[in-house]
Length: 285
Image (cartoon, rainbow, N blue to C red):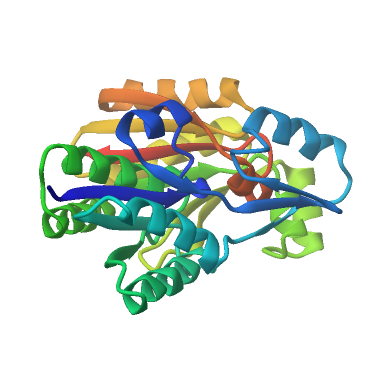
Protein backbone atom coordinates (compact mmCIF):
# COMPACT_ATOMS: atom_id res chain seq x y z
CA UNK A 1 0.00 0.00 0.00
CA UNK A 2 1.36 3.41 -1.00
CA UNK A 3 1.73 6.12 1.63
CA UNK A 4 2.85 9.75 1.40
CA UNK A 5 5.08 11.21 4.11
CA UNK A 6 5.75 14.90 4.64
CA UNK A 7 9.16 16.24 5.68
CA UNK A 8 9.97 19.83 6.61
CA UNK A 9 12.64 21.70 8.57
CA UNK A 10 12.59 23.43 11.92
CA UNK A 11 12.06 26.91 10.48
CA UNK A 12 8.47 25.90 9.65
CA UNK A 13 7.71 26.58 13.35
CA UNK A 14 5.07 23.83 13.49
CA UNK A 15 4.22 22.99 17.12
CA UNK A 16 5.46 19.57 18.21
CA UNK A 17 1.94 18.33 19.01
CA UNK A 18 0.79 19.14 15.46
CA UNK A 19 3.82 17.43 13.92
CA UNK A 20 3.24 14.32 15.99
CA UNK A 21 -0.49 14.23 15.24
CA UNK A 22 0.04 14.48 11.48
CA UNK A 23 3.24 12.43 11.27
CA UNK A 24 5.30 15.31 9.87
CA UNK A 25 9.06 14.67 9.99
CA UNK A 26 11.27 17.64 10.91
CA UNK A 27 14.97 18.12 10.14
CA UNK A 28 16.47 20.78 12.44
CA UNK A 29 18.71 23.67 11.52
CA UNK A 30 21.45 24.60 14.00
CA UNK A 31 21.94 27.59 16.32
CA UNK A 32 25.44 28.59 17.37
CA UNK A 33 26.14 30.69 20.47
CA UNK A 34 29.92 31.03 20.34
CA UNK A 35 31.31 27.52 20.81
CA UNK A 36 27.91 26.08 21.77
CA UNK A 37 25.78 24.45 19.07
CA UNK A 38 22.11 23.58 19.48
CA UNK A 39 19.54 21.84 17.29
CA UNK A 40 16.67 24.20 16.56
CA UNK A 41 13.47 23.08 18.36
CA UNK A 42 15.23 19.89 19.55
CA UNK A 43 17.98 20.76 22.03
CA UNK A 44 17.02 24.45 22.19
CA UNK A 45 13.38 25.44 22.54
CA UNK A 46 11.92 28.91 21.98
CA UNK A 47 11.55 29.94 25.64
CA UNK A 48 15.15 29.07 26.48
CA UNK A 49 16.40 30.63 23.27
CA UNK A 50 14.85 34.05 23.92
CA UNK A 51 16.21 34.08 27.47
CA UNK A 52 19.67 33.29 26.10
CA UNK A 53 19.34 35.81 23.27
CA UNK A 54 18.74 38.84 25.49
CA UNK A 55 21.42 37.83 27.99
CA UNK A 56 24.18 37.21 25.44
CA UNK A 57 26.12 40.05 23.84
CA UNK A 58 27.13 38.13 20.71
CA UNK A 59 24.51 37.51 18.03
CA UNK A 60 23.92 33.79 17.45
CA UNK A 61 24.55 32.36 14.02
CA UNK A 62 22.56 29.67 12.22
CA UNK A 63 23.42 26.90 9.79
CA UNK A 64 21.52 24.55 7.52
CA UNK A 65 21.26 20.76 7.79
CA UNK A 66 23.66 18.76 5.64
CA UNK A 67 22.43 16.57 2.77
CA UNK A 68 23.39 13.54 4.86
CA UNK A 69 21.07 14.67 7.66
CA UNK A 70 18.21 14.83 5.18
CA UNK A 71 19.30 11.52 3.69
CA UNK A 72 19.01 9.81 7.08
CA UNK A 73 15.35 10.86 7.36
CA UNK A 74 14.51 10.01 3.75
CA UNK A 75 16.09 6.54 3.99
CA UNK A 76 14.24 5.75 7.21
CA UNK A 77 10.90 6.74 5.69
CA UNK A 78 11.64 4.84 2.49
CA UNK A 79 12.16 1.59 4.42
CA UNK A 80 8.40 1.08 4.27
CA UNK A 81 7.59 -0.19 0.75
CA UNK A 82 5.54 2.18 -1.39
CA UNK A 83 6.35 5.30 0.64
CA UNK A 84 6.46 8.56 -1.32
CA UNK A 85 8.06 11.68 0.18
CA UNK A 86 7.23 15.37 -0.16
CA UNK A 87 9.85 17.59 1.49
CA UNK A 88 8.93 21.29 2.01
CA UNK A 89 11.58 23.80 3.08
CA UNK A 90 12.71 27.31 3.91
CA UNK A 91 12.95 29.67 0.93
CA UNK A 92 16.04 29.00 -1.17
CA UNK A 93 16.59 32.77 -1.24
CA UNK A 94 17.12 32.78 2.53
CA UNK A 95 19.08 29.58 3.20
CA UNK A 96 20.85 26.63 1.63
CA UNK A 97 18.46 24.27 3.43
CA UNK A 98 16.40 23.65 0.28
CA UNK A 99 19.55 22.87 -1.72
CA UNK A 100 20.69 20.36 0.93
CA UNK A 101 17.32 18.63 0.63
CA UNK A 102 17.61 18.59 -3.18
CA UNK A 103 21.08 17.02 -2.98
CA UNK A 104 19.77 14.38 -0.57
CA UNK A 105 16.87 13.66 -2.91
CA UNK A 106 19.30 13.20 -5.80
CA UNK A 107 21.32 10.77 -3.69
CA UNK A 108 18.15 8.79 -2.96
CA UNK A 109 17.46 8.44 -6.68
CA UNK A 110 21.08 7.53 -7.47
CA UNK A 111 20.91 4.74 -4.90
CA UNK A 112 17.50 3.69 -6.28
CA UNK A 113 15.87 4.21 -2.90
CA UNK A 114 12.93 6.23 -4.20
CA UNK A 115 11.94 9.68 -5.38
CA UNK A 116 11.77 12.70 -3.07
CA UNK A 117 9.62 15.63 -4.20
CA UNK A 118 11.49 18.64 -2.76
CA UNK A 119 9.48 21.88 -2.61
CA UNK A 120 10.85 25.41 -2.22
CA UNK A 121 8.26 27.06 0.03
CA UNK A 122 9.45 30.53 -1.04
CA UNK A 123 8.59 31.42 2.53
CA UNK A 124 9.63 31.19 6.18
CA UNK A 125 8.18 30.23 9.56
CA UNK A 126 4.51 29.32 9.36
CA UNK A 127 4.52 30.27 5.68
CA UNK A 128 6.26 26.89 5.40
CA UNK A 129 4.26 25.35 8.21
CA UNK A 130 0.89 25.95 6.60
CA UNK A 131 2.07 24.10 3.48
CA UNK A 132 3.40 21.13 5.42
CA UNK A 133 0.28 20.86 7.57
CA UNK A 134 -2.05 21.10 4.56
CA UNK A 135 0.04 18.52 2.69
CA UNK A 136 -0.02 16.10 5.63
CA UNK A 137 -3.79 16.43 6.00
CA UNK A 138 -4.29 15.89 2.26
CA UNK A 139 -2.06 12.81 2.37
CA UNK A 140 -4.12 11.42 5.22
CA UNK A 141 -7.26 11.99 3.15
CA UNK A 142 -5.82 9.89 0.33
CA UNK A 143 -4.77 12.55 -2.17
CA UNK A 144 -2.01 11.75 -4.66
CA UNK A 145 1.44 13.34 -4.74
CA UNK A 146 0.43 15.37 -7.80
CA UNK A 147 -2.73 16.63 -6.10
CA UNK A 148 -0.78 17.62 -2.98
CA UNK A 149 1.87 19.46 -5.00
CA UNK A 150 -0.90 21.41 -6.76
CA UNK A 151 -2.50 22.18 -3.39
CA UNK A 152 0.83 23.53 -2.11
CA UNK A 153 1.16 25.82 -5.13
CA UNK A 154 -2.37 27.17 -4.68
CA UNK A 155 -1.94 27.90 -0.97
CA UNK A 156 1.47 29.49 -1.54
CA UNK A 157 0.05 31.80 -4.20
CA UNK A 158 -2.64 33.32 -1.96
CA UNK A 159 -0.98 33.24 1.47
CA UNK A 160 -0.20 36.58 3.13
CA UNK A 161 2.48 37.27 5.74
CA UNK A 162 3.14 40.40 7.78
CA UNK A 163 6.03 40.63 10.28
CA UNK A 164 6.27 43.56 12.70
CA UNK A 165 9.84 43.78 13.97
CA UNK A 166 10.20 45.30 17.43
CA UNK A 167 13.79 46.49 17.01
CA UNK A 168 16.10 47.12 14.09
CA UNK A 169 19.19 45.99 16.01
CA UNK A 170 18.95 42.32 15.02
CA UNK A 171 18.51 43.19 11.36
CA UNK A 172 21.54 45.43 11.69
CA UNK A 173 23.64 42.75 13.42
CA UNK A 174 22.66 40.30 10.72
CA UNK A 175 23.83 42.72 8.02
CA UNK A 176 20.37 43.56 6.68
CA UNK A 177 20.66 47.31 7.42
CA UNK A 178 23.45 49.71 8.37
CA UNK A 179 24.32 50.65 11.94
CA UNK A 180 23.33 54.30 11.43
CA UNK A 181 19.87 53.24 10.25
CA UNK A 182 19.43 50.99 13.27
CA UNK A 183 20.45 53.73 15.72
CA UNK A 184 18.21 56.30 14.03
CA UNK A 185 15.34 53.82 13.89
CA UNK A 186 15.67 53.08 17.59
CA UNK A 187 15.72 56.77 18.48
CA UNK A 188 12.61 57.43 16.40
CA UNK A 189 10.87 54.19 17.47
CA UNK A 190 10.61 53.10 13.85
CA UNK A 191 8.83 49.73 13.43
CA UNK A 192 9.53 47.99 10.11
CA UNK A 193 6.71 45.95 8.56
CA UNK A 194 8.18 43.04 6.63
CA UNK A 195 6.81 40.39 4.33
CA UNK A 196 8.16 37.71 2.00
CA UNK A 197 7.81 38.45 -1.70
CA UNK A 198 6.96 36.07 -4.55
CA UNK A 199 10.66 35.22 -4.96
CA UNK A 200 10.97 34.15 -1.33
CA UNK A 201 12.95 37.22 -0.24
CA UNK A 202 12.29 39.21 2.95
CA UNK A 203 11.06 42.63 1.87
CA UNK A 204 10.26 45.78 3.84
CA UNK A 205 6.70 46.88 3.03
CA UNK A 206 6.76 49.99 5.19
CA UNK A 207 8.37 51.64 8.21
CA UNK A 208 6.07 53.29 10.72
CA UNK A 209 6.81 55.25 13.88
CA UNK A 210 5.38 53.49 16.92
CA UNK A 211 3.89 50.03 17.37
CA UNK A 212 0.25 51.12 17.47
CA UNK A 213 0.54 52.98 14.15
CA UNK A 214 2.46 50.06 12.65
CA UNK A 215 -0.31 47.61 13.54
CA UNK A 216 -2.91 49.98 12.11
CA UNK A 217 -0.83 50.10 8.94
CA UNK A 218 -0.86 46.28 8.77
CA UNK A 219 -4.67 46.42 8.78
CA UNK A 220 -4.57 48.90 5.87
CA UNK A 221 -2.21 46.61 3.96
CA UNK A 222 -4.46 43.63 4.60
CA UNK A 223 -7.50 45.53 3.38
CA UNK A 224 -5.65 46.28 0.13
CA UNK A 225 -4.15 42.78 -0.26
CA UNK A 226 -7.10 40.55 0.71
CA UNK A 227 -10.11 40.75 -1.60
CA UNK A 228 -12.66 39.32 0.83
CA UNK A 229 -13.24 39.74 4.55
CA UNK A 230 -13.03 36.07 5.63
CA UNK A 231 -9.72 34.48 6.56
CA UNK A 232 -7.91 31.88 8.64
CA UNK A 233 -5.31 33.43 10.95
CA UNK A 234 -2.12 32.22 12.60
CA UNK A 235 -0.57 34.71 15.02
CA UNK A 236 3.11 34.31 15.83
CA UNK A 237 5.37 36.11 18.24
CA UNK A 238 8.94 36.14 19.51
CA UNK A 239 8.40 36.21 23.27
CA UNK A 240 5.82 39.01 22.99
CA UNK A 241 2.34 37.63 23.67
CA UNK A 242 0.95 41.08 24.47
CA UNK A 243 1.75 42.42 21.00
CA UNK A 244 0.41 39.20 19.44
CA UNK A 245 -2.89 39.63 21.29
CA UNK A 246 -3.10 43.26 20.21
CA UNK A 247 -2.52 42.36 16.56
CA UNK A 248 -5.09 39.56 16.73
CA UNK A 249 -7.67 41.94 18.20
CA UNK A 250 -7.22 44.49 15.45
CA UNK A 251 -7.54 41.84 12.75
CA UNK A 252 -10.68 40.41 14.36
CA UNK A 253 -12.17 43.92 14.52
CA UNK A 254 -11.74 44.38 10.78
CA UNK A 255 -12.09 40.89 9.27
CA UNK A 256 -14.15 37.75 9.64
CA UNK A 257 -11.65 35.44 11.32
CA UNK A 258 -12.83 31.87 10.81
CA UNK A 259 -10.06 30.30 12.88
CA UNK A 260 -7.08 31.51 14.89
CA UNK A 261 -3.98 29.72 16.16
CA UNK A 262 -0.93 30.93 18.06
CA UNK A 263 2.67 29.87 17.53
CA UNK A 264 6.00 31.04 18.95
CA UNK A 265 8.67 31.91 16.41
CA UNK A 266 11.43 29.35 16.72
CA UNK A 267 15.12 30.00 17.48
CA UNK A 268 16.35 30.25 13.87
CA UNK A 269 13.66 32.72 12.80
CA UNK A 270 13.94 34.55 16.12
CA UNK A 271 17.70 34.92 15.72
CA UNK A 272 17.16 37.01 12.60
CA UNK A 273 13.94 38.86 13.49
CA UNK A 274 14.79 39.49 17.14
CA UNK A 275 12.74 39.26 20.33
CA UNK A 276 9.47 41.17 20.43
CA UNK A 277 8.60 40.44 16.81
CA UNK A 278 4.95 39.70 16.07
CA UNK A 279 3.52 38.31 12.86
CA UNK A 280 0.27 37.47 11.10
CA UNK A 281 0.03 34.53 8.69
CA UNK A 282 -3.17 34.75 6.70
CA UNK A 283 -5.01 32.34 4.45
CA UNK A 284 -7.82 34.24 2.68
CA UNK A 285 -11.07 32.39 1.99
